[in-house]
Length: 622
Image 1 (cartoon, rainbow, N blue to C red):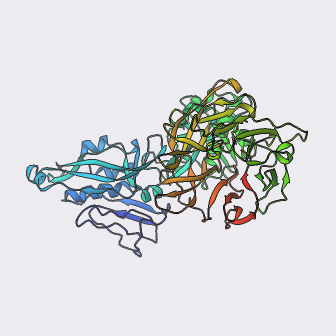
Image 2 (image 1 turned 90 degrees about the vertical axis):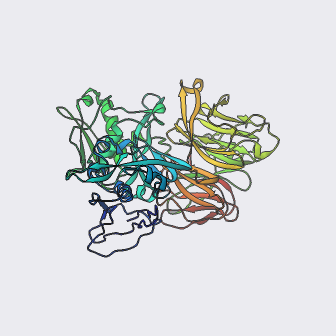
Image 3 (image 1 turned 180 degrees about the vertical axis):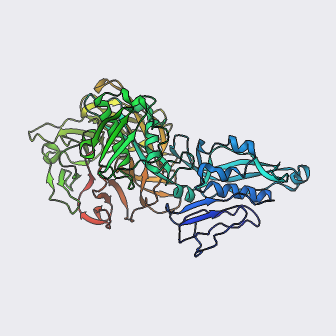
């Protein structure tokens, strides 16, 4: 088990005890310890063990105020059903009104507590106050949506009074307590896990649905408040609708008000791998096509849960089955379905020509120039981006001044005419590498100091449109990558001498080239990295990021789209990475451009290997 050391004041013990044999831990502010099995010290930096079950015990008779405070904090890290034992550290009224489900405050380490001053003790002998402090690094709201923060000072008050117990004795209890939980990072990672729930992207053409991942955190094993297992919590969160950040660009096909039938606490596939989901009568309103889309939402949402491998989803209404959908039928709802060769890769060779590689997880094929002027034309290129259907390519001239767009399926003698031109004097102030979204639109940033712009070419053609980014402030977009679902954009933004990663929501009003498009509600995705060198989407809600922490060395790591970092997020090191490329299929190799080793790849379970000594700007479609 991985639990935070709690060193909150003089004489406070550090909780590091684990009962190994049955994977159960008993916690108490009064100093209760396991009485059987081996005892092992566990450092707070170790990875959390989600299989460890933690139970709370009530306060001892005559417990001091500091024992009540520490016991309460310990108990919040437990698997206490409905936090019943945790509430015994509160007065009767506070115990009834405290709402642990209001959200979670995540601190870098377990909260410190500072006690009352001597003056306070003398002035108020029957009441006292403790302050909880720490470095807040994230919040999880009532929708289970995670939001990272640059370390921020946290301070909250716990007020204690003496309350008469059933036996007539006065006992210290907490009567003022903030709603929600306060956890250190290691306890949070032990107790919760990230899951993706799925909704349909707004603004798509009829008959072209695309599911969008909406990451949230749910409780490992059983939720203390609802008593639901992980799969049931996840479906419950799905039915509640998109999180506030995603809601403007994605929606659910479940009729409003649809919920699980009351009393549903476990969802498990049957012997034939069919998951039956009992829904309230609101679901009966869905038409057959809508019902299939509802089932697709459930299938995609649950397929990453190792405890719930689902081969088929059957939605059940008031009078029995509404519809069902097999896993092998769900591909029609996949975002950014792309071409028939999703493992192909593209790069710019040492002569400035765009080449294609038919790749595989075992190796790389022989590079060959793409059809058309990008592959054999007179203009030398420096960077390339390829549409997800691999029918169009966009390449940047070597001086980064002009962006050219050309067909990759027509080998005719097409004349190259710049689609976008930058007027900046310096190459580093001109155009960024291009990127294509799941709607077939082409995006590029003009970094001209005299007028920096984010540009979109609808369908990869026509007049470039300036996209508003109201939350950008004085920052400048240095690079960009579009998600396959077409509703999110990852931006490298330079500001104040640092380049950070931000995620924005793409809002479209209207259709096609006439649509008014903006990037809204920018969020810092990796606040711990003060300088980000490269970024690429890797799967449905994950990015691979190259960057440095303050005073640190370059590292390659995974970051979730909500900004959280998975426990296994740090990848093997590689030197001097200038660009990185990942595919929507997470099983395909991760590729990187390096200054010293050329283009290298990292296959799952392997180490980095050089695959091309000459060439640069290797990308997957997108």
